[in-house]
Amino acid sequence: MSKQWYDANQQYLSASIALIRHTLEQYTVNLLNSSDKLSNNDKYEQDLQKAAEAIPAPSALERICQIFGLSAFERDVLLLCAAMELSNNFSSICSVAQPEE
Image 1 (cartoon, rainbow, N blue to C red):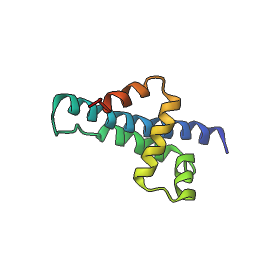
Image 2: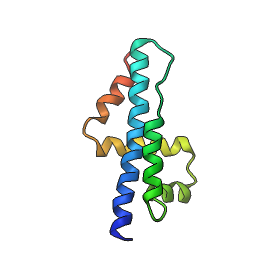
Image 3: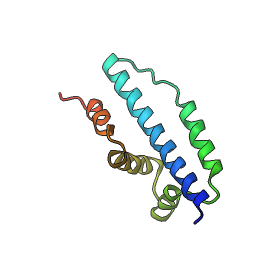
Image 4: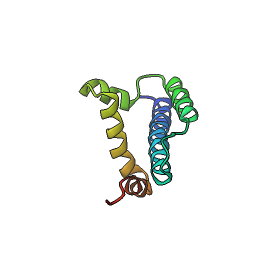
């Protein structure tokens, strides 16, 4: 693969994780505020679309999803796991999303 693909693949992965992060953050905000309204993910979805358009071949994430036949939910779980390893503060967002009862 070319350097262009590696750079675009990294952007795609970052944009995918950013969308997951935003969704999880909005969930926690709404959980803490007892609100049912979720904010709009359009900006993050647009960033992901731009990253997808910039990549000259399928991303590594897309290839993994194809190879293993992952659903959108399973893809998001995979991204959550990757984010836990790649982002130094993602675990704190996850812990806020799971308040103790």
